Length: 365
Figure 1 (tube, rainbow, N blue to C red):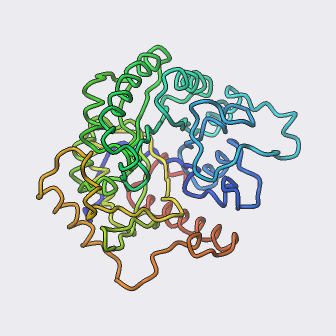
Figure 2: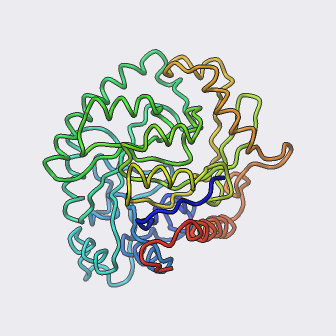
């Protein structure tokens, strides 16, 4: 790993709900009420973090999923909240004020590329005081698998481009920035093409630091090329396990896997100083990247053998010992209590690691 960068701007690191779906009650098997926006903000304050990244459903004061709003696999709509919630003002304006009183930034999280649906989320972001809306476009299965759209990927991408152009015009009018994530779907070439085609300061990339290898790309080269367009960051790390068809990406605490965070932070300090970030640990299901399968590649941008060799070199250098069990407690069918403890342990280890990189947000830890 590289040495930690000496940057003048403190890191603005917040908390995302998606790395701890059991402990936050977002998984249907969790057996606990889902967190509210205030709950997540209170957690961020207790952890000494600088902000939160929240789904629009947690900010809209609604028990149903709004159009264009992301729901993770297995996530359920809001259920009954805490005692006394009926008398509490949970409007977006009130939630935004709650965040500001605690010195927290807010990033709004959604999904999709329909301009009308995104426009409604932009309005919500303005009301809550969020400068950035993060979205994903999908199309591929998690793990970079484009086979569901085999032979139709370019048509899909053309549709995405047209609609994101229109959505960005709405973002400009609202005064917010739309950031599209590398969500194990779009490759860097495609994200850069969108940024160059749209050409707006109100459009850019939500960089998930763990996902470059999901599209078979060497992480540092990936970071270097997208850094000028980064508007928001998900801090994520993975262990790698070799398989007959490629490799698996398995969640781990930040700083214990393959991601070179000091090198990344150096690039961001140069190209996106002060960018908002959120700790978002990987999913409870390992991601199988089948790069050695012949049908993985046909709809990908052209890659050289040198590029693939670089990516596989990172995988090999960080591969866990063969013969071990790569499964998470969720995949092993362990109890809810064990899964919650696993999530919370990895989150605390990740927060501790981030603190070693730099004193950030006034040293509130």
